[in-house]
Amino acid sequence: MLSIVDIQKELGKGINLVPFRDKNIKENSINLSASCYAWTMSNGNVFRSGDRWILAGDNNEKKCTGENFKLLKGESAVYEINGKKEIILLPFATTLIETEEVLAVGNNIGGTYHSKVGLVSQGLGHIGTMLGPNFSGHSLIAIHNVSKEVLTIEIGETFMSVTFNYLTTPIATNNATRNGHLEKLSELGVQLDTKEREALDEDWKSSTIRVREKLKEDKNFKQYADTLQRKKYENFKKYINKNNISIIVVSIILIAIFYRLASITDSKLDKPIWVDRFWNVGFSGIFIVGFNLVIKLMKPSQ
Image (cartoon, rainbow, N blue to C red; front, side, top):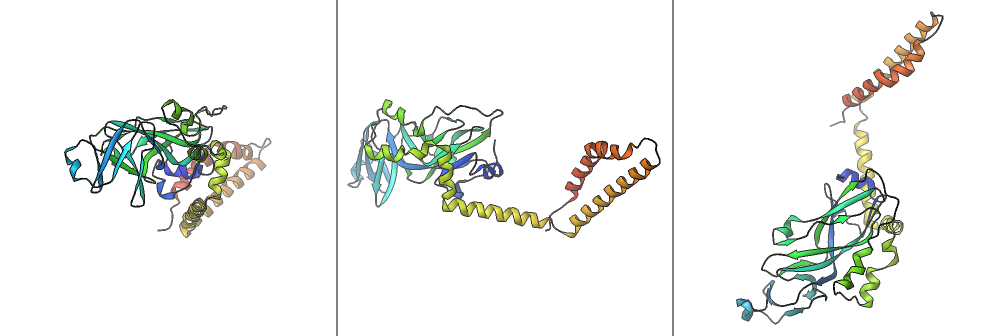
């Protein structure tokens, strides 16, 4: 599994996502956000009660405000209220949600999708699916509401995490999974209108190279990359101190002394062997061990 350090190294290379939000980069995963493209797989009528929705037929239905929303299988589960869009998830039903982010990975990276604890604790779940190498596009996530309550996810809210793994052997073929699983939506009864299809199926979203180009043009990513470079430089500067310089100087002097001794010894022999052993045996064994010891002795400034 890749840590945040590995993920940071792969950003703009083997891992690319647009739009880029640095706050979504976690210790060993990347959080993904809910887009406005979401469809319910069940029928239901919901009413607004204060700051939440209730299913028609509940006892509190008479106390509800005038806001109501009829959800039909295969149609949008997104409702806008007070200028805020949210996805409505019916009880004991499945809702399909496309991620805002377009994610593209290289041929040596795979991964798995995981539900966030905050949503799981409410009764929302996701049966883990996989991210294949060479995939590029939106991720279609099936969210299951196993509670008896009507739950919501705000558009732009993170609702899923993806973790990454390196493949022992990179694949040489393209990923057969299409961007956003658009071909499966029609099989599930979801009919995209022209605007939705054009937005989800833009050409660049299916190309890892073009997603990478978009990422490198992203202002937020540029700032994030610059910040990482500054941190690396600051960490490097911490190792430039008197203690570490002394260790390096002493190490160089010792190597020079051993080499000089080998040269003097060879000058007294008919068949010189010690300089050769100095390079072959010394650097292949003794000096490598010594180098590792020197690295361990070097400490950053406090």
